[in-house]
Image (cartoon, rainbow, N blue to C red; front, side, top):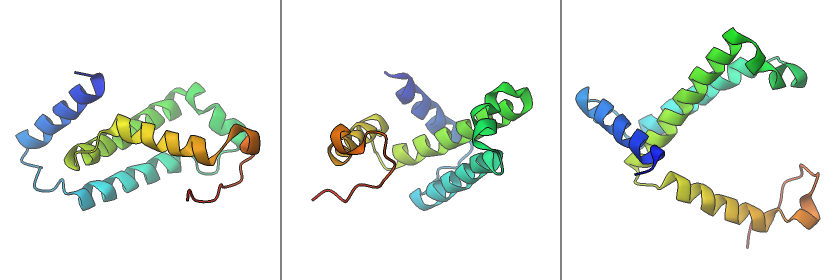
Length: 118
């Protein structure tokens, strides 16, 4: 069992013990995930690019960022577990698609958006 699977199981047990599965619908989990991403974004709001790159050098800021990243991970994993999505496989599939859309020859050093796959 992978560490990700172990974490998903721990989250399942955590929710079950509190009778929270009734609230952990895909809609609610997706909304909670969006909220946590917003809280993560708030940690970077108004920072310069240099300040955002150095955020982990500040003990207080780094603790907040770690906490928000943890929340994002928890809700993403809980959502994927609830929907029976293999999170690692989904990421590999998405990366496979991105490798086709964003070829090295055409996109190296470029931030432009690729057209949709046909």
